[in-house]
Length: 256
Image (cartoon, rainbow, N blue to C red; front, side, top):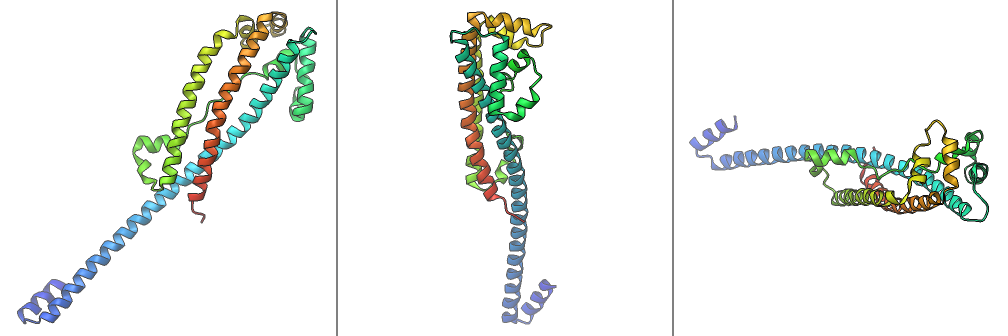
């Protein structure tokens, strides 16, 4: 219709009308482009907000699990430290004394666990000081974004930098912890390894009782304690970054 009007105005040499029609066309095209750009920006913002919300939920879960792990790991280290002290004094460390040491610790430091373990055997209590070691968790959403190329949808440079820093630190921590496991394991010794990692044997109490009188057992315990302290420091380093990333993500997520 506009084209027909312009043609008619040209034929009648109504240049003012031609100019006015041209302005109308240009303004219409400009408005159309702006509306399209606005819709595109709005869609991109909605996509980014959805991604940030997923990342925030995931990092919150990682942080909460990390907090719980560090509490439990600290308990295990405290138990091992008390155990090492007891093993190195003049009084012999037998199953009775070992069980009393564990029960006393839980009653003073973790009463809720003490109730659960009141009827546990010495070997069962012994097993609570080991196992459950975690390596820093990875964000599945972050991995998917990088793999799919959708990481570009996050326009906030602050968020991008924080996520990349966390990923790099986590990878370094996982390598360091893995290397430490390989380097430390030979120092544990057979007496410690057998009693610790074969607790499910038919006679765990006998295995543990025999291990306690072996001087190599305490050496293995000290080596294991040192490994856990080293590994936990790496975990804590990444955990602190996880919490910083979570703060940034939560600040970027728009509340409805």
